[in-house]
Amino acid sequence: MIGIIDYRIGNIGNVARALKYMGFDHRVIKRPPKDIHNISVLFLPGVGAFKPAMASLEDLGWVDFVRSWTERGNPLLGICLGMQLLFTRSFEEEECSGLGLVEGTVELLPFKKSPHMGWNDVSWSSDIPGVFADHIPSGSFFYFVHSYGIPSSREEMGFSMVDGVRFTSAICSSNIMGFQFHPERSGGNGLKLLQAAMKYFGEECPE
Amino acid sequence: MLTKRIIPCLDVKNARVVKGVNFIGLRDAGDPADLAGFYMNEGADELVFLDISASDERRSTLIEWVEAVADRIFIPFTVGGGISTAEQARRIINLGADKISINTSAVKRPSLIRECSSLLGKQAVVVAIDAKKVSSQKWEVYIQGGRIATGIDVLEWSLEAEKQGCGEILLTSIDRDGTKEGYDLDLIEKVANHVAVPLIASGGAGTVSHFREGFEHGCDAALAASVFHFGEIRIKDLKKYLKANSMAVRISDEQF
Image 1 (cartoon, rainbow over the protein chains, first blue to last red):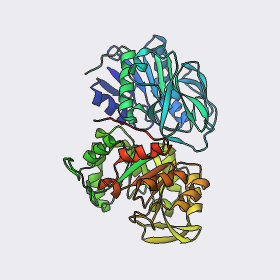
Image 2 (cartoon, each protein chain N blue to C red):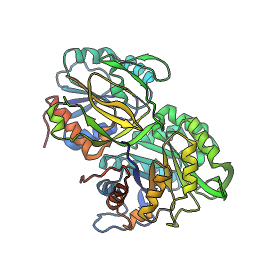
Image 3 (tube, each protein chain N blue to C red):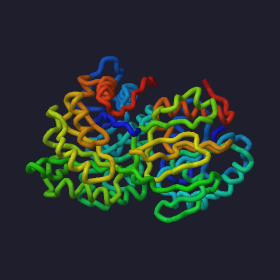
């Protein structure tokens, strides 16, 4: 079962709706669960500002839980702000530490217009796992809304360009994955990508 | 490359889409969710819904149709109409809308923009501006559905809206709305050069070339209603035309 972390930041309903549409067994989790045996993949969604999000994760006891979850090799998928939170630190407004699961920083990206809002293409890295490249061609469009982002990452799985500014739009580091865009808002491509991600994590895909 | 967005706009009254929608093969042309699904399959990049119900009716009907739309589509949608507090905005976002749009209430109390964006993130806050031309290079902000003049300059208000923390501006030309004579290109260009948030142009689209002109004058997204609702322009054809004219658009062949 997929567990969606509800840490009171933004609307998580649409992530659940996308999983429901595809037939994935999922549950919204408000507190770190004591019994994790029935959870196979954790989703960390989120929109809004980095610092309050991190504070909310901390208050609700998620920071330690998520760290030990991933240390044991369990799968974690971050979406939008949820991807940014995976990194070492953010320079949004004031400096703030992140979950530190992936090395790198979150910075204000020098777009001419901000937020970067709309459909943009994602180019896959050459070493992307086959399960993604097989189902979603490099250059497919996804829906973005963000001002801050990851300028570059060693774990880059895909990148995008705005006005000549290149940034990391997807990451994959064995059991940790992140998308800067919103797959749950990206039509058929987004649903296909979520399916591929679940397949990558060994989750059974309903037909 | 970031693509130019095409956005159909739907007016909703008492949970029904109004102002004429005329499609062959649509089960229920008045159902917001059915129409949302239709437009998603047509290749719309986003949808905007404007609830024009009286406030008592809106309170009781909004819940059912916003949730139904969220259940049906996997593209972003905005809900506007009668939002005057950040708490009302939050409720709509929690029902599954991606953004809310505010107009009159933001003009009356600009801090509402900041309240909404600190609660929901600026990406969720669209400020809608109804603009009427008063001289060759000057436009005035109108409120209450374009009925009441405010004396406020459109450029000043758009900058203030950005400062207060909106994530996007939806700019409607009252002069062009419903005329099918094309967008007010001077207005688009002026506002696009004045603010750094994305700009949605609205009011006047009648042909595919009107959309191209709008984008050439600096808007990031183009909104239209009747040309889509009456099938005069198919979004798929419009995007083919824009692509043939070297504009970045998202072509999709998805069916849900």
